[in-house]
Length: 329
Image 1 (cartoon, one colour):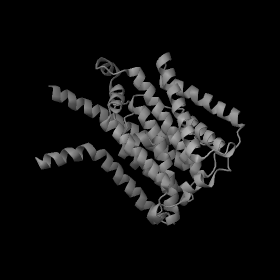
Image 2: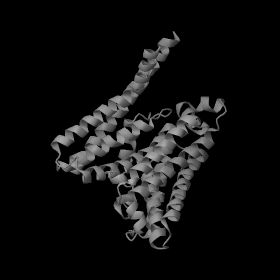
Image 3: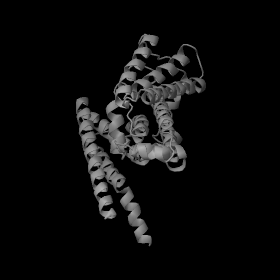
Image 4: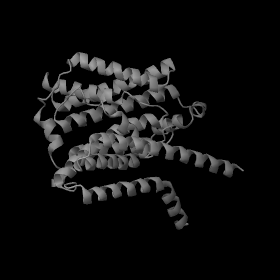
């Protein structure tokens, strides 16, 4: 009985264990061949970057879990970062007030995406592609594309200090806290189950009593909130709120989420897998730069990884369908 239980646990977690093995393999390879990869300074920088990347992927993960996409993720993150930065620099607002207001803006922009998807019936790919341009255009018009680099010391210190002397930034703790909340959302709450049900089969979810339209709006709202959190973390990491925040988020948001085990067709997520996927992508990005390889190579690798992850996701879906048909016979 115990052996059967262990086999079941191993089978369920085998994709994440494989991803973990690949991640450890890359990190060990860079530790040997990339000078300075394991230094305290580099580990601090790498983990801080990974925290931002994972938070970005969380925003895409929650949209994908409902069978949606959020191409405005970067635009929302950039708008939130500029909003919070402007409130702190121009209006001298305390970070404890500016940050929640910025996150509220992210949730509002995300909810707007969901409302437009529901009311128009147009695919979220098209809607969020359009709103990405709208949000970025409004942000640039309001801020005149100026940067906010005179941010409060308390906000900047939060990114720079080390937790208990270890090369770990508080940004990592924020990301882990968000991960715990997301795990609880999907495993312990009705909303989480409804999001996954909508992603798996909308018609079946509606027939079982799920308010699909309201669930989609809530999903996009949470996606916008997480995008806003990533924008805040990015501004803290850069010690600067700049208009370019979010402009290069699209590829890693999909790559990390799908690599981590989120089904691109919806209905399945893995919070822990996304964290491991973020460590993989961050490690590759950092290691390649330490090897003095062009940054263009990083985008090439991320693109190939995304293609591989999507292909594996499709293979898993086909295999699962065949097994279900065999079981039905």
